[in-house]
Length: 276
Image 1 (cartoon, rainbow, N blue to C red):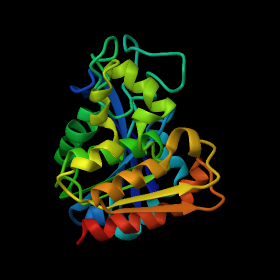
Image 2 (image 1 turned 120 degrees about the vertical axis):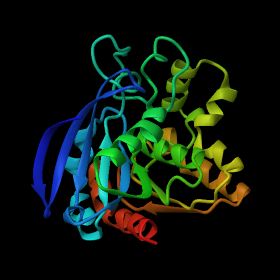
Image 3 (image 1 turned 180 degrees about the vertical axis):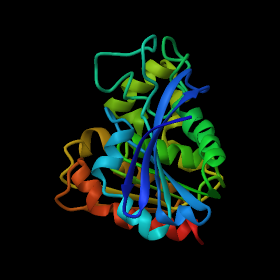
């Protein structure tokens, strides 16, 4: 790994690292915030997954999360949202290709060779982080929009791996909204049965662990009724008896202003689970 950025921040260090990813077949960047407590011993890790068009910079520059991570002694890890570079498939649209990995493992060409963000986030990245930084075994995961979808799906598909999961304005039912239908069709093909494995509203029915889901959703979000549709997850959780705390926040939209307003509560939620 090569460290390409480091900045003092709330008594800790905000870093960005680059490495060659075996899962994705390209160089990847991820951000790591090391709180001041990391100087004295191992700390738990909260993984953050960003949304469409984002990279490793958006969360660390806009969410204001470092202040709360420093208070609680939690390491923050924020990867890029897709493979990138020459020779990697892409699309002119913002919601497909580079910057839009959707945290799944693609099976359809030309995407299958590199678009394996699920394998990267669930397996390669934690192994890398735990090998190079002083961490405890405790992990949590969160994200926004496409990244909220990723956080929910990865937690549901890996029982026992995460102590807690949360999301801001997640795409909870990608198989039933335009963003998800487009991405799943391109990355996986037209077999909708295959899509179910990447849809949180479908996965809760057979979840082997009843990990509580914490979701914040702004009621002024421009994508609420068309792309996000949190009511689909609420119905699925009610049917499955899966614990869900869905908080509709009046007046908030889809932006990082929304995330910055509630990120402290989410990090507090995760910190309690990570140290419990």
